[in-house]
Length: 195
Image (cartoon, rainbow, N blue to C red):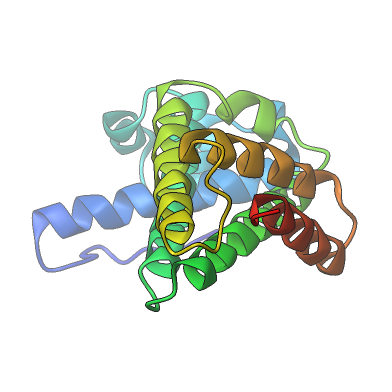
C-alpha cells in the first residue's frame, strides 16, 4: 500500500495531478497482482491511500482508470520517439533510432502484459487511433526526409513505406529477445533502402 501524505504538493492542480498519477500506478500494480477481474475500486482507494469517495471524483470505474493509464503510456512512448526523431542532422540515423525504439517498445509492452487481459481492454478506442496516426505521420516524415537525402527509396510514397515499416515492426511483440528485435528492425530498415 502506498502511504500518501496529506498535502501532496504546493498547488491544487499539482495535487490533483499527483493523486491521479498515484491512482493509475496503484491500479496497474493491483491488476498485475490480482488480474483484471480481481481489482475493485475499494482496493484501488486503499492502495492509493485515499477514500473511495475521492477516487470516484477522479474515475467512475476500473476500466476508465486503465484506459487513462494506457493513454499515459502511449503519450510517454510518443514523446520518446519524437525526441529520437529530433536528434541529429542525418535523417536516416533518426529514422533508424525511431524504428528500433518502436520495435523495442512493442516487444517490452508485450512482455509486460503477457498473460493479462490488460491488452485486450486498453488497445482500442479513440486514444489508440490518434496515437497510431501520430506515429505514422512521424515515421512518414522521417522517411520523406531520408528519401530526399537519397538514403531511402523514393519509388513508393512515404506514408505507404511508414505503414510497411510499422506493420513489420509490430512483429516485435512476438519475439523472444531484444537481439531478435534489433535484427527485425535492421531487416525492416533494409526494406526501405534504395534497390
